Length: 94
Image 1 (spheres, rainbow, N blue to C red):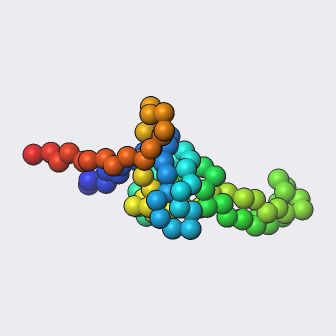
Image 2 (cartoon, rainbow, N blue to C red):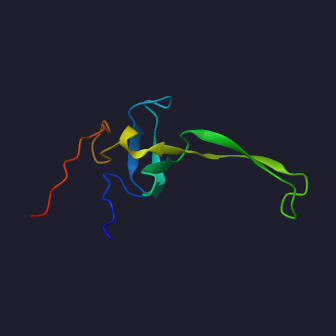
């Protein structure tokens, strides 16, 4: 079985290039390879309703990050002064 290789990985700094969150930047929290999606810190916050439990006796509404398709993000170079988004090339094995 071959694992898909993506242009971003956990911990990378990325910028959203299309969609409702266009221009937002953040750190990749997780990569979901089966769905080809990523979770980005502080981008696409959704509200999750939690039912009553011992941890939350009153119940709660928690904000958490939602997934974004991996094709809609671009890697950001952290070493440059301007922190521009960059294009990356993939090298094919012979």
